[in-house]
Length: 484
Image 1 (tube, rainbow, N blue to C red):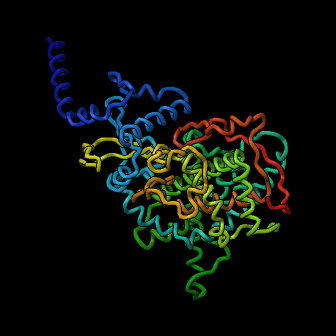
Image 2: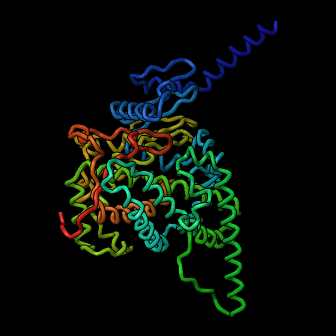
Image 3: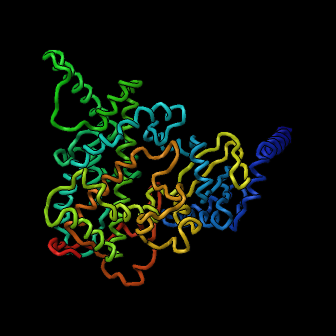
């Protein structure tokens, strides 16, 4: 009797579930592609395997979207997701669908509700506090830190110059991590080499493993900043001054604390959440971006020579550090960075959730609660926006007034929830790349043949995009006195 009742309940539940999901089921039939969806798992089998194999599956689904008018669908278990490779559709989705699906709860378990992963109710007021911290005025003061850390990187690379193939990413990651720790927390890691955070490779896997250690360190820094602010205020009151002076720039944490006092004070937990996200995203994004740029320049020596000629015209054979005023002059280097980010965006896809029915220009209506993968990778390689040579590495796309769809290039996302640290990342990358290329010439890894250099890099993705080969290349000392 009980088994019959259970069977009836299951049938009724199944019928109700099918009725409730009828619009999504209809949409899934409309957006079919060449990949078969199996019962229970759907298309999830495509994501089984290594990080390289998973990225290949994401690329394949993106290509299916390109071939089907810029949109396709995929079932991940019982959840249906839209895959978008159309810039206009992406623009609408990123402007109107601001919430992120439940899958992002995994990230919140580790970082808390930092603005990158927070639900809308938390993100909106936090963004108002965070945005002023990334003003051009505040960012310019950090170029001095980027330049100092870039010169340390030059010294760190000297032992491996001319010694064969190396993985450049670990050296660039050290630069970005030390820069982030100094600009965000005010901590010089080289002076605290025994500090636990210094020993962490700033990848998501390692970060999760040591999350409690990282949180404890950030909490101690926040506590010390509160004491410092109180001390400065006491000095001001005792000396009758409007404010005590300081000889060094404020950190992001201090700027964020100031902003929160003016708008709506953040608790220490909220400060920690924002600092963790800034430190994690700021380290990985810039490191991955700069590493891809160096790999591409090692494959295209003529383009590397053009970058060096631009640098020589600005710096000559001097060893002076890069200044904030130098960065806007580096037009060709910026074009190289952007073209690299077009082909190899550090975050290759963005996930959003449709909170209410949304009709796209194509006439397709996305029902509420549909998940969306905006494939930055596919939009950046869509021939509709970049021509038949979309796979070609050509920095001239970003020079000479070349026009493209305003949302066909979005390495740091678009819309209200775009990456607030975009300028920070660009200034960091321009500074370190300018310093490196004035001192070293970058060559392909040993035993590379011409055919290998003409094929795209093999990439993998956990959350960040990476070179499957580990960003391998060689470097030699550059003769600064000879423009190329």
